[in-house]
Length: 607
Image 1 (cartoon, rainbow, N blue to C red):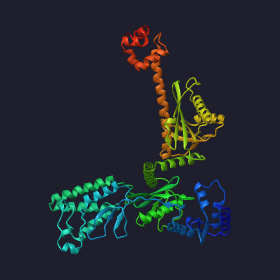
Image 2 (image 1 turned 135 degrees about the horizontal axis):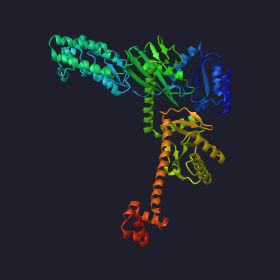
Image 3 (image 1 turned 180 degrees about the vertical axis):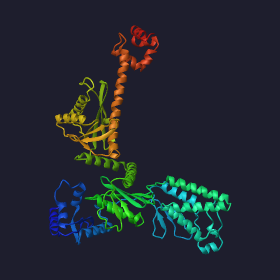
Image 4 (image 1 turned 90 degrees about the vertical axis):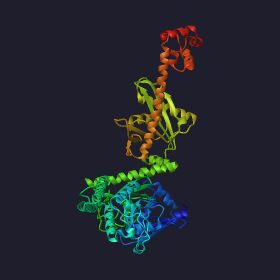
């Protein structure tokens, strides 16, 4: 930013009023890049231009792009909130909280037409039809549609069943009629009134209320039995069984919680996921998740408000239940007339909120998996940025090294170092170490030797040093590594991965003195760190087994009197294994090591 531009912006800030209002940051092309609200415009806007460690990288980038400041004064903070919301929707500024949901959810639609069809759709049209959902998966939607078609006989054809077309007598019944899945409205065998009653039954099912359709089926079954139409009575009984099976499969929440909507928010580094669960008549009838870009200075209460508005307008059919369960109150409740927001502390409502959070976590995991497949570079960048943020590093750790020891009751002590670059194993840089200076099982002393040897050599060679060193252990191993690095005059960040009683990675530590980092064990970041730990452990154990096996072979042949190291190497180079030496013909042994040594080998193996 040029000095003249900076001076001009300072003048604009100084002229701002102390009144509540909305401010807009404009870039050099005249595009509004950020919209914000303020209780005091001058105080709020001036805070962006004050040097502060609290400013995120995104805020610093935003400030560098500001060329002009616009503002609108309003009468109250509430008016500022409403105006800000309206401007963000219309302008879609780059650095505000924005909805990034590109997913189209499956719905079930009851068409507005003569003899309405019940169908699957992913498009909501303002055509007077009734839409139900959205459903969290196509499988869930199909199971509902299959149940409806099994229990309530409605048409599935695409015919125009207007009264005029039916009266012309151009249609004939199809296979569905003969199977009992349709009552033949196309040929006048079913009236519009009777068909409409059956559509109402379907609508009640889609709203989560199974009582009307149960009463209808029971009544029809009894009537058919009284009239001695036993085949028809059996069909109704089968449909009642299907109803019972469907009720058993559906997610019944509570007999006491009837109609509520549930929202949860799952913030992440540069995004947030808001999950919506709709409960009607005690059953879950809709689940969906939307993704938001967090923007600059993102507040969770503002994000929740925006997400609820979006879901109400585009997913929830323009209405909310009278009671809405949320993890915390949105930034304003004035936008939602007649709605009571509940923040549960215990009981069934808290269980519902946890169900919503779990759905959001599952959706986020799916999105990240898709990102890893479609754009692995972007996925890796997210992981490294998240690691930088959690460990409070100066830069993303693109070069990571992790150490581990391995020994069996002090025998054959070895260690290993694995290297990860840009989130991927760099196997050509893996290194094994034989412990030289430590007697007995002393993991700390072994770690001290290995780390000293590793970084002394890298410094001597002028090689690149890592951005992060990870110890496969807790605070003790971190302390040893810190001691060595300090002795070498190196300032390399340190992290430690500790295991629980069941030998599972459970905690992440960083810095010195080590501090516990609150990373969720289910997060992609924790899985990435666990992968590093598993890799260094695998590499150390494989080397230890290899050395142990080699030592066993040598020790077996070394027991033979008169057979030295050179003879052992000759035998193993030729025969490969001790077993083949044991069973080798005397002539072959004599030709290889001479008759005298061959005689001793044969005698040792009892031959």
